[in-house]
Length: 238
View 1: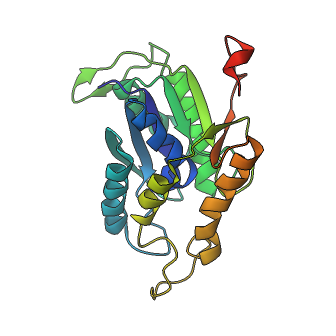
View 2 (view 1 turned 60 degrees about the vertical axis):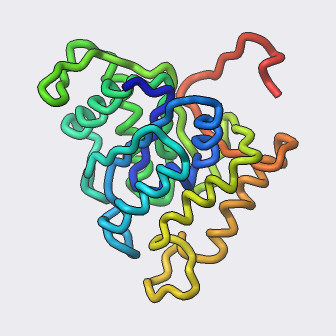
C-alpha cells in the first residue's frame, strides 16, 4: 500500500500533539496518511501500554489515517543503530511515502531527538538498493522519500515553515483527548506530569494560535526541514 505521507512518533500521541491538525487537513484533501509509533510509551508515568494501544487506535480513527503501526521499540532505551534502522526502513519501503514527518530534532524528552535522527537516517538508507529487507518473506524494493520534515514538540523551536490548520483544531484536540490516561483530568488520581496539567492542555490552542497570528491566520503548526524548500513561483508562497 502506497501512502502520500508517513508520520513517525517516538511515542503514541507525539504525532497528534505536534501535527495532528496537519494530518487531519491532509486527509481531508484526499491524501493517504499513515502513522508509525516507535514505542508503546510503556515508561509513561500515567496509564499502561495496553491502555495507550487502545487510545492510539481511537486517535487514528478520529484523524482518519489509512494505517497505524507500532514497532514496539523499548521506550526510553531504543538506539539509532543498524537493527532499529532496518525496522524503520521496512516501514518506509512498505508504504513508499513521498513525505515523511518525524520527531523534533531537539526536545525535552530524550526519545524525541533520538527518534528524529533514527527516522532521518533510515529515510536515507532506505534508498540504498544494496541494503536488503524483507517483510513476510517478500523482498522489498529500495525507496527514499522526497522530503523529511520534523514537527515541533515541547521546545519552541523556530519553524522553517508553518501549515495553516484553521478549521482542523477540533479534530486535533479530539484525537488528543482520546488519550484519556495522559492529559489533564481534574478527577484523575494518577500522578501529575508535565503534559497532564491544565496549562499544557490550554497550550495546545495558544501555541497554534500564536503561529497562526504570525501568518495572519487563526491556527498553524510548525515544521523544520533538512534541506532548502523549493517553490516554482513566488506566487506559491502566502
